[in-house]
Image (cartoon, rainbow, N blue to C red; front, side, top):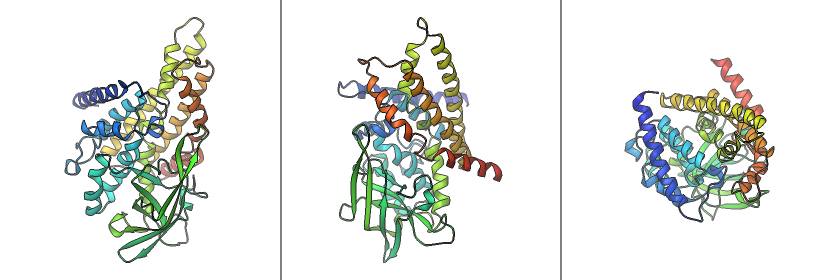
Length: 371
Protein backbone atom coordinates (compact mmCIF):
# COMPACT_ATOMS: atom_id res chain seq x y z
CA UNK A 1 0.00 0.00 0.00
CA UNK A 2 1.39 3.39 -0.98
CA UNK A 3 2.00 6.14 1.55
CA UNK A 4 -0.74 8.21 -0.09
CA UNK A 5 -3.27 5.37 0.09
CA UNK A 6 -2.33 4.58 3.68
CA UNK A 7 -2.79 8.23 4.63
CA UNK A 8 -6.20 8.38 2.95
CA UNK A 9 -7.33 5.23 4.75
CA UNK A 10 -6.10 6.62 8.07
CA UNK A 11 -8.15 9.78 7.52
CA UNK A 12 -11.24 7.73 6.74
CA UNK A 13 -10.72 5.61 9.84
CA UNK A 14 -10.57 8.77 11.92
CA UNK A 15 -13.78 10.14 10.41
CA UNK A 16 -15.56 6.82 10.93
CA UNK A 17 -14.45 6.71 14.57
CA UNK A 18 -15.88 10.18 15.14
CA UNK A 19 -19.30 9.16 13.79
CA UNK A 20 -19.23 5.96 15.85
CA UNK A 21 -18.21 7.82 19.02
CA UNK A 22 -21.04 10.34 18.56
CA UNK A 23 -23.55 7.53 18.19
CA UNK A 24 -22.42 5.72 21.33
CA UNK A 25 -22.61 8.88 23.41
CA UNK A 26 -26.33 8.11 23.78
CA UNK A 27 -26.91 5.85 26.82
CA UNK A 28 -29.37 3.69 24.89
CA UNK A 29 -26.83 2.87 22.19
CA UNK A 30 -24.39 0.03 22.78
CA UNK A 31 -22.12 -2.09 20.60
CA UNK A 32 -23.31 -5.50 19.48
CA UNK A 33 -21.58 -8.53 18.02
CA UNK A 34 -22.56 -9.37 14.43
CA UNK A 35 -23.56 -5.71 14.09
CA UNK A 36 -23.79 -5.81 10.30
CA UNK A 37 -26.72 -8.22 10.72
CA UNK A 38 -28.11 -7.56 14.22
CA UNK A 39 -27.68 -3.79 14.46
CA UNK A 40 -30.41 -2.21 12.34
CA UNK A 41 -30.39 1.55 12.94
CA UNK A 42 -31.17 3.59 9.79
CA UNK A 43 -30.33 6.87 11.51
CA UNK A 44 -26.80 5.67 12.26
CA UNK A 45 -26.40 4.65 8.62
CA UNK A 46 -27.63 8.08 7.57
CA UNK A 47 -25.07 9.72 9.85
CA UNK A 48 -22.38 7.85 7.91
CA UNK A 49 -23.97 9.03 4.67
CA UNK A 50 -23.92 12.65 5.80
CA UNK A 51 -20.17 12.33 6.39
CA UNK A 52 -19.64 10.86 2.92
CA UNK A 53 -18.69 7.43 4.29
CA UNK A 54 -21.11 5.38 2.18
CA UNK A 55 -20.50 4.61 -1.49
CA UNK A 56 -16.82 5.41 -1.14
CA UNK A 57 -15.86 3.24 -4.11
CA UNK A 58 -18.76 4.37 -6.32
CA UNK A 59 -18.24 6.85 -9.19
CA UNK A 60 -18.87 10.48 -8.31
CA UNK A 61 -21.49 10.77 -11.08
CA UNK A 62 -23.74 8.52 -9.00
CA UNK A 63 -23.09 10.27 -5.70
CA UNK A 64 -20.10 8.18 -4.65
CA UNK A 65 -16.67 9.38 -3.60
CA UNK A 66 -14.73 7.82 -6.49
CA UNK A 67 -12.31 6.20 -4.07
CA UNK A 68 -11.01 2.66 -3.79
CA UNK A 69 -12.36 -0.53 -2.29
CA UNK A 70 -9.31 -0.46 -0.04
CA UNK A 71 -10.57 2.86 1.33
CA UNK A 72 -14.01 1.37 1.85
CA UNK A 73 -12.44 -1.55 3.69
CA UNK A 74 -10.88 0.89 6.16
CA UNK A 75 -14.35 2.17 7.09
CA UNK A 76 -16.04 -1.25 7.29
CA UNK A 77 -13.28 -2.52 9.56
CA UNK A 78 -13.88 0.37 11.93
CA UNK A 79 -17.63 -0.23 11.97
CA UNK A 80 -17.27 -3.91 12.74
CA UNK A 81 -14.46 -3.43 15.24
CA UNK A 82 -16.70 -1.07 17.20
CA UNK A 83 -19.86 -3.16 16.91
CA UNK A 84 -21.62 -0.22 15.24
CA UNK A 85 -25.20 -0.88 13.99
CA UNK A 86 -24.73 -1.07 10.23
CA UNK A 87 -27.39 -3.50 9.01
CA UNK A 88 -29.66 -0.84 7.49
CA UNK A 89 -27.16 -0.01 4.74
CA UNK A 90 -24.86 -3.03 4.65
CA UNK A 91 -26.30 -5.25 1.91
CA UNK A 92 -27.49 -2.33 -0.21
CA UNK A 93 -24.18 -0.49 -0.19
CA UNK A 94 -21.95 -3.57 -0.25
CA UNK A 95 -23.70 -5.66 -2.87
CA UNK A 96 -26.65 -4.09 -4.64
CA UNK A 97 -24.94 -0.80 -5.46
CA UNK A 98 -21.87 -2.39 -7.08
CA UNK A 99 -24.13 -4.82 -9.00
CA UNK A 100 -26.19 -1.90 -10.30
CA UNK A 101 -23.06 -0.04 -11.32
CA UNK A 102 -21.82 -3.05 -13.29
CA UNK A 103 -25.07 -4.39 -14.73
CA UNK A 104 -27.97 -2.00 -14.14
CA UNK A 105 -29.88 -0.09 -16.77
CA UNK A 106 -29.34 3.69 -16.86
CA UNK A 107 -32.89 4.18 -15.58
CA UNK A 108 -32.37 1.82 -12.63
CA UNK A 109 -29.07 3.46 -11.73
CA UNK A 110 -30.61 6.93 -11.73
CA UNK A 111 -33.60 5.72 -9.76
CA UNK A 112 -31.93 3.59 -7.07
CA UNK A 113 -28.28 4.53 -6.52
CA UNK A 114 -28.92 7.95 -4.90
CA UNK A 115 -31.60 6.39 -2.66
CA UNK A 116 -29.21 3.67 -1.53
CA UNK A 117 -26.64 6.28 -0.54
CA UNK A 118 -29.22 8.31 1.39
CA UNK A 119 -30.48 5.09 3.06
CA UNK A 120 -33.96 5.71 1.68
CA UNK A 121 -33.72 2.48 -0.33
CA UNK A 122 -32.98 -0.50 1.91
CA UNK A 123 -32.56 -3.85 0.15
CA UNK A 124 -33.07 -7.35 1.44
CA UNK A 125 -31.55 -10.31 -0.42
CA UNK A 126 -34.07 -12.78 -1.82
CA UNK A 127 -31.84 -15.73 -2.61
CA UNK A 128 -32.37 -18.78 -0.38
CA UNK A 129 -35.42 -21.03 -0.56
CA UNK A 130 -36.47 -24.20 1.26
CA UNK A 131 -34.65 -26.41 -1.23
CA UNK A 132 -32.11 -23.84 -2.34
CA UNK A 133 -29.84 -22.77 0.48
CA UNK A 134 -26.26 -23.75 -0.13
CA UNK A 135 -27.42 -25.16 -3.50
CA UNK A 136 -28.54 -21.73 -4.69
CA UNK A 137 -28.99 -22.85 -8.29
CA UNK A 138 -32.00 -24.92 -7.22
CA UNK A 139 -34.25 -21.87 -6.80
CA UNK A 140 -37.85 -22.38 -7.92
CA UNK A 141 -39.16 -18.81 -7.66
CA UNK A 142 -40.24 -17.83 -11.17
CA UNK A 143 -40.37 -14.62 -13.17
CA UNK A 144 -42.79 -14.67 -16.11
CA UNK A 145 -42.64 -12.04 -18.83
CA UNK A 146 -45.69 -9.81 -19.22
CA UNK A 147 -46.27 -6.49 -20.93
CA UNK A 148 -43.74 -3.97 -19.66
CA UNK A 149 -42.02 -6.30 -17.24
CA UNK A 150 -42.25 -9.51 -15.24
CA UNK A 151 -44.44 -11.19 -12.63
CA UNK A 152 -42.58 -12.91 -9.80
CA UNK A 153 -44.08 -15.87 -7.93
CA UNK A 154 -42.50 -18.00 -5.25
CA UNK A 155 -41.14 -18.04 -1.72
CA UNK A 156 -37.80 -16.94 -0.29
CA UNK A 157 -36.60 -18.06 3.13
CA UNK A 158 -34.21 -16.63 5.73
CA UNK A 159 -34.45 -13.19 4.16
CA UNK A 160 -32.77 -10.79 6.57
CA UNK A 161 -34.64 -7.59 7.49
CA UNK A 162 -37.26 -8.09 4.77
CA UNK A 163 -39.83 -6.63 7.19
CA UNK A 164 -37.85 -3.38 7.19
CA UNK A 165 -36.74 -3.30 3.57
CA UNK A 166 -38.11 -1.03 0.87
CA UNK A 167 -36.75 -3.20 -1.96
CA UNK A 168 -35.68 -6.78 -2.59
CA UNK A 169 -33.02 -8.32 -4.75
CA UNK A 170 -34.59 -11.50 -6.18
CA UNK A 171 -32.94 -14.40 -7.97
CA UNK A 172 -35.66 -16.07 -10.05
CA UNK A 173 -36.04 -18.63 -12.81
CA UNK A 174 -37.04 -17.11 -16.16
CA UNK A 175 -36.78 -20.34 -18.16
CA UNK A 176 -36.37 -24.09 -17.70
CA UNK A 177 -33.11 -25.35 -19.12
CA UNK A 178 -31.26 -28.65 -19.13
CA UNK A 179 -28.89 -27.47 -16.39
CA UNK A 180 -30.30 -25.85 -13.26
CA UNK A 181 -27.59 -23.16 -13.32
CA UNK A 182 -29.09 -21.89 -16.57
CA UNK A 183 -32.25 -19.85 -16.99
CA UNK A 184 -31.81 -17.73 -13.86
CA UNK A 185 -32.17 -13.94 -13.81
CA UNK A 186 -31.80 -11.15 -11.24
CA UNK A 187 -34.41 -8.53 -10.41
CA UNK A 188 -34.71 -5.46 -8.19
CA UNK A 189 -38.22 -5.42 -6.77
CA UNK A 190 -40.29 -2.91 -4.78
CA UNK A 191 -41.55 -4.42 -1.50
CA UNK A 192 -45.19 -3.86 -2.39
CA UNK A 193 -47.36 -5.28 0.43
CA UNK A 194 -50.23 -5.92 -1.99
CA UNK A 195 -48.22 -8.65 -3.76
CA UNK A 196 -45.51 -9.51 -1.22
CA UNK A 197 -46.17 -11.10 2.18
CA UNK A 198 -43.48 -11.07 4.86
CA UNK A 199 -43.75 -13.62 7.69
CA UNK A 200 -41.36 -13.40 10.68
CA UNK A 201 -38.91 -16.16 11.55
CA UNK A 202 -37.92 -15.71 15.20
CA UNK A 203 -34.47 -17.03 16.10
CA UNK A 204 -33.30 -18.70 19.31
CA UNK A 205 -32.56 -15.31 20.83
CA UNK A 206 -36.14 -14.18 20.35
CA UNK A 207 -34.99 -11.72 17.70
CA UNK A 208 -36.86 -10.98 14.48
CA UNK A 209 -34.20 -10.61 11.81
CA UNK A 210 -35.14 -13.31 9.31
CA UNK A 211 -38.31 -13.78 7.33
CA UNK A 212 -40.23 -15.89 4.89
CA UNK A 213 -41.17 -13.78 1.87
CA UNK A 214 -43.99 -14.85 -0.47
CA UNK A 215 -44.30 -13.24 -3.92
CA UNK A 216 -47.70 -13.44 -5.63
CA UNK A 217 -47.67 -11.87 -9.10
CA UNK A 218 -45.25 -9.22 -7.86
CA UNK A 219 -44.65 -6.92 -10.81
CA UNK A 220 -41.18 -5.69 -11.68
CA UNK A 221 -40.68 -3.39 -14.69
CA UNK A 222 -38.30 -4.27 -17.50
CA UNK A 223 -35.66 -1.75 -16.44
CA UNK A 224 -35.30 -3.53 -13.07
CA UNK A 225 -33.90 -6.68 -14.69
CA UNK A 226 -30.28 -6.74 -13.55
CA UNK A 227 -27.90 -7.63 -16.37
CA UNK A 228 -28.92 -10.17 -18.99
CA UNK A 229 -31.94 -12.44 -18.89
CA UNK A 230 -30.81 -16.01 -18.19
CA UNK A 231 -27.31 -14.96 -17.10
CA UNK A 232 -28.19 -14.69 -13.42
CA UNK A 233 -26.02 -17.52 -12.18
CA UNK A 234 -22.80 -16.16 -13.67
CA UNK A 235 -23.67 -12.69 -12.41
CA UNK A 236 -24.52 -13.76 -8.87
CA UNK A 237 -21.31 -15.78 -8.53
CA UNK A 238 -19.32 -12.65 -9.36
CA UNK A 239 -21.42 -10.54 -6.99
CA UNK A 240 -20.78 -12.95 -4.13
CA UNK A 241 -17.18 -11.74 -4.26
CA UNK A 242 -18.51 -8.55 -2.66
CA UNK A 243 -20.45 -10.54 -0.07
CA UNK A 244 -17.90 -13.22 0.79
CA UNK A 245 -14.76 -11.13 0.57
CA UNK A 246 -15.56 -8.39 3.08
CA UNK A 247 -14.41 -7.62 6.59
CA UNK A 248 -17.68 -8.97 8.02
CA UNK A 249 -16.25 -12.45 7.43
CA UNK A 250 -13.54 -12.02 10.05
CA UNK A 251 -14.60 -9.12 12.30
CA UNK A 252 -18.20 -9.95 13.22
CA UNK A 253 -17.08 -11.23 16.60
CA UNK A 254 -14.31 -8.69 17.14
CA UNK A 255 -15.86 -7.19 20.26
CA UNK A 256 -15.61 -10.67 21.79
CA UNK A 257 -11.99 -10.90 20.66
CA UNK A 258 -11.34 -7.58 22.40
CA UNK A 259 -12.75 -9.16 25.57
CA UNK A 260 -10.14 -11.90 25.23
CA UNK A 261 -7.39 -9.33 24.77
CA UNK A 262 -8.38 -7.64 28.03
CA UNK A 263 -7.86 -10.93 29.81
CA UNK A 264 -4.35 -11.49 28.44
CA UNK A 265 -1.27 -11.13 30.62
CA UNK A 266 -2.97 -11.89 33.90
CA UNK A 267 -1.80 -14.29 36.58
CA UNK A 268 -2.03 -17.85 35.37
CA UNK A 269 -3.07 -16.82 31.88
CA UNK A 270 -0.22 -18.55 30.02
CA UNK A 271 -2.43 -20.98 28.10
CA UNK A 272 -4.88 -18.23 27.25
CA UNK A 273 -2.08 -15.93 26.12
CA UNK A 274 -0.80 -18.65 23.79
CA UNK A 275 -4.29 -19.10 22.36
CA UNK A 276 -4.75 -15.35 21.89
CA UNK A 277 -1.38 -15.15 20.15
CA UNK A 278 -2.47 -17.72 17.61
CA UNK A 279 -5.78 -15.96 17.00
CA UNK A 280 -3.99 -12.64 16.56
CA UNK A 281 -1.71 -14.13 13.92
CA UNK A 282 -4.70 -15.55 12.06
CA UNK A 283 -6.49 -12.21 12.20
CA UNK A 284 -3.46 -10.50 10.65
CA UNK A 285 -3.52 -12.99 7.76
CA UNK A 286 -7.27 -12.54 7.28
CA UNK A 287 -6.93 -8.77 7.14
CA UNK A 288 -4.23 -9.18 4.49
CA UNK A 289 -6.53 -11.45 2.49
CA UNK A 290 -9.30 -8.86 2.84
CA UNK A 291 -7.01 -6.17 1.45
CA UNK A 292 -5.99 -8.47 -1.42
CA UNK A 293 -9.66 -8.97 -2.35
CA UNK A 294 -10.26 -5.20 -2.20
CA UNK A 295 -7.26 -4.52 -4.44
CA UNK A 296 -8.47 -7.10 -6.96
CA UNK A 297 -11.88 -5.42 -7.04
CA UNK A 298 -10.16 -2.07 -7.60
CA UNK A 299 -8.35 -3.61 -10.56
CA UNK A 300 -11.70 -4.58 -12.09
CA UNK A 301 -11.49 -8.26 -11.23
CA UNK A 302 -13.97 -10.67 -9.65
CA UNK A 303 -11.94 -12.44 -6.95
CA UNK A 304 -14.24 -15.45 -6.70
CA UNK A 305 -11.64 -17.88 -5.35
CA UNK A 306 -10.01 -15.40 -2.99
CA UNK A 307 -13.34 -14.26 -1.53
CA UNK A 308 -14.40 -17.87 -0.97
CA UNK A 309 -11.11 -18.60 0.81
CA UNK A 310 -11.51 -15.51 2.99
CA UNK A 311 -15.01 -16.52 4.04
CA UNK A 312 -13.95 -20.10 4.74
CA UNK A 313 -11.03 -19.09 6.95
CA UNK A 314 -12.81 -16.10 8.47
CA UNK A 315 -15.82 -18.08 9.63
CA UNK A 316 -13.58 -20.61 11.39
CA UNK A 317 -11.67 -17.79 13.06
CA UNK A 318 -14.87 -16.27 14.41
CA UNK A 319 -16.06 -19.62 15.78
CA UNK A 320 -12.67 -20.15 17.43
CA UNK A 321 -12.88 -16.72 19.09
CA UNK A 322 -16.20 -17.71 20.63
CA UNK A 323 -14.80 -21.06 21.75
CA UNK A 324 -11.78 -19.36 23.31
CA UNK A 325 -14.02 -17.05 25.32
CA UNK A 326 -16.15 -20.00 26.36
CA UNK A 327 -13.09 -21.36 28.18
CA UNK A 328 -13.01 -18.27 30.38
CA UNK A 329 -16.70 -17.33 30.83
CA UNK A 330 -17.62 -13.69 30.75
CA UNK A 331 -18.70 -12.43 34.19
CA UNK A 332 -22.46 -12.09 34.56
CA UNK A 333 -22.18 -8.35 35.06
CA UNK A 334 -20.00 -7.86 31.98
CA UNK A 335 -21.48 -5.81 29.16
CA UNK A 336 -20.19 -8.54 26.84
CA UNK A 337 -22.16 -11.37 28.47
CA UNK A 338 -25.22 -10.86 26.25
CA UNK A 339 -23.04 -10.59 23.14
CA UNK A 340 -21.32 -13.84 24.07
CA UNK A 341 -24.66 -15.61 24.51
CA UNK A 342 -25.92 -14.18 21.21
CA UNK A 343 -22.78 -15.21 19.36
CA UNK A 344 -22.85 -18.75 20.75
CA UNK A 345 -26.41 -19.22 19.54
CA UNK A 346 -25.70 -17.57 16.18
CA UNK A 347 -22.42 -19.35 15.47
CA UNK A 348 -23.94 -22.45 13.78
CA UNK A 349 -25.09 -20.13 11.01
CA UNK A 350 -21.68 -18.55 10.43
CA UNK A 351 -20.60 -21.17 7.92
CA UNK A 352 -24.00 -21.26 6.21
CA UNK A 353 -24.57 -17.61 5.37
CA UNK A 354 -22.88 -16.88 2.09
CA UNK A 355 -22.11 -20.55 1.39
CA UNK A 356 -21.35 -23.72 3.35
CA UNK A 357 -17.87 -25.21 3.74
CA UNK A 358 -18.55 -27.74 0.99
CA UNK A 359 -19.72 -25.05 -1.43
CA UNK A 360 -16.73 -22.83 -0.71
CA UNK A 361 -14.24 -25.69 -1.16
CA UNK A 362 -15.90 -26.58 -4.47
CA UNK A 363 -15.61 -22.96 -5.65
CA UNK A 364 -11.95 -22.78 -4.67
CA UNK A 365 -11.17 -26.07 -6.42
CA UNK A 366 -13.06 -25.10 -9.57
CA UNK A 367 -11.47 -21.68 -9.85
CA UNK A 368 -8.03 -23.12 -9.17
CA UNK A 369 -8.53 -25.64 -11.96
CA UNK A 370 -9.43 -22.82 -14.35
CA UNK A 371 -6.38 -20.74 -13.50
